[in-house]
Image (cartoon, rainbow, N blue to C red):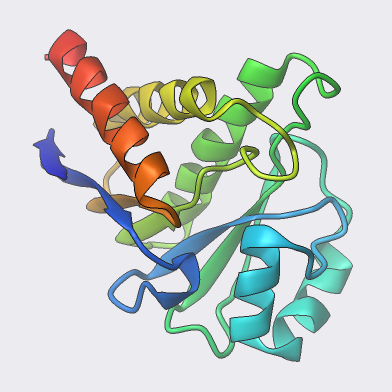
Length: 180
């Protein structure tokens, strides 16, 4: 699914976040120490190689809602933007912290002249954020930020499962109809 909003393409696809070769920056669902972990962080670190962990060491720790940028190393992307999403039920105010992840990632993309970014479903894995609620926050935040973007021209949401992709597309359609 793909829509152009104020000249910026927003799309959602099923796939592997570590294999988005046509995207300049991928967002990492990072942990506070920016170390390899499970899920998205594990996949990105494995694909990027040990240089990513080495570059991230002095950038850690980060707080929920924060984002930092590193090189992509062996990934097909020039950059990785590491976002620490909130742990659902623990980090408060969780809606605001999750929105800050997307806002801060887009801000870093703008500051670094990045024209395309791919996001996983931040905080929905081990951090337990309910998928639909997290998707609504992600989309509404991105839609709010679009008018201020000058460099970013493509925002892609990447989902590992078809189930998540379908759920996200439904929310995307709902939000677009309410947004136009």
